[in-house]
Image (cartoon, rainbow, N blue to C red):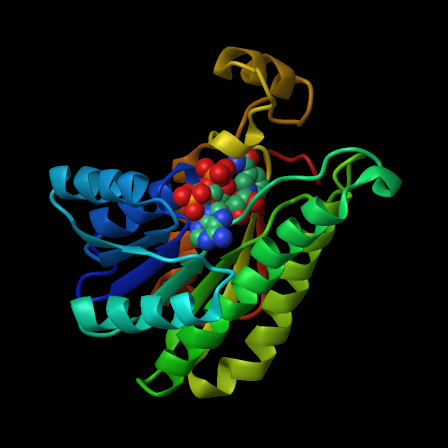
Length: 252
Ligand SMILES: NC(=O)c1ccc[n+]([C@@H]2O[C@H](COP(=O)([O-])OP(=O)(O)OC[C@H]3O[C@@H](n4cnc5c(N)ncnc54)[C@H](OP(=O)(O)O)[C@@H]3O)[C@@H](O)[C@H]2O)c1
């Protein structure tokens, strides 16, 4: 399929994991992809992988918590490939384990700043471009932890991702009349770095996950990407403000 030929897609946090998988999937279907994150080397590797597969991509270093850097990211990305049609706000961090009373203020602030303010700032600048250029599509990456499921000792992350789910719906209502469709994808434990516990191997993780969700396995990065691409595609033209859970049945 070549659903995104002639389109430019921006993916934040595209130097690893689900963001890299999503960037590769968009490029494989014809999009020119702007990959963003804070680490030049990992972004360059994503660009190399896309190029090796016959696709087109460019890296822009940007921290989603810094408004001016995000404004420049959107400007440079749009200039590089002639417009910005699709944005996937995937950058996120997982910190601050332990019960609520023991979460440090530093971890709380970092998680909320990256996962919530980072998604808001990204949308703010993406929408400014899209509303002046005929519209666009945005997919925010939330989590099944948040609006859909809670577990002990992850309150900062759960709070931040519930906020991403709510922010997505609020933004969808605010901007649909400007030709901008906004939705979220909420992955569960996926085949990407964030689901690895400290010191855990991929084999350990696969064993642990067997008993943690009804399907008995992680979601593949390509399965999460497939949901993002669907929401970004014309086939989802009437899908507005939804939050698509891809979590192997964990929150069913
Ligand atoms: N993996 C899972 O099981 C899972 C499940 C549910 C939801 N999610 C969500 O899916 C997203 C991707 O997760 P992942 O597993 O692929 O994690 P990951 O490999 O750690 O990827 C996160 C990416 O975000 C970037 N990033 C972090 N802070 C940033 C900032 N301030 N500005 C710009 N980029 C930043 C990181 O790159 P730099 O550090 O180089 O900037 C990294 O490439 C996250 O939002 C996560 O919460 C993951």
